Image (tube, rainbow, N blue to C red):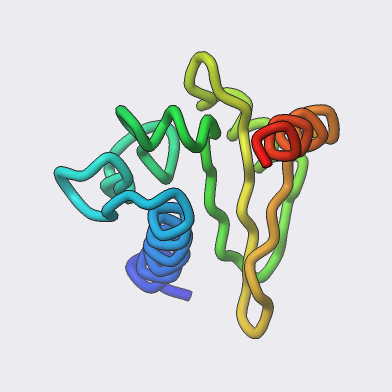
Length: 119
């Protein structure tokens, strides 16, 4: 796959994930909004959350849309790029495979505990 095609494939997943997060937390998605996809040249998280969006969804999100996965490397990258005060998430996908989330078990359980307490 050509470099440009691979980047486009990654950006498609970023936009899908960013829009899904925005819809879920009641925010707008796009440039100039509290939920946006990172620019291809931007270092760090793939989904940029600020302001009220970050308060509602305290995760640093790394997206990987590749046919061959290297989960350990993805987790290391997400942990390295994690914003202070957030937990990391890795969203993985590939052709004919819906996106899945990878995160630390204790972070997932803490997230659920908070969710259950707010019901």
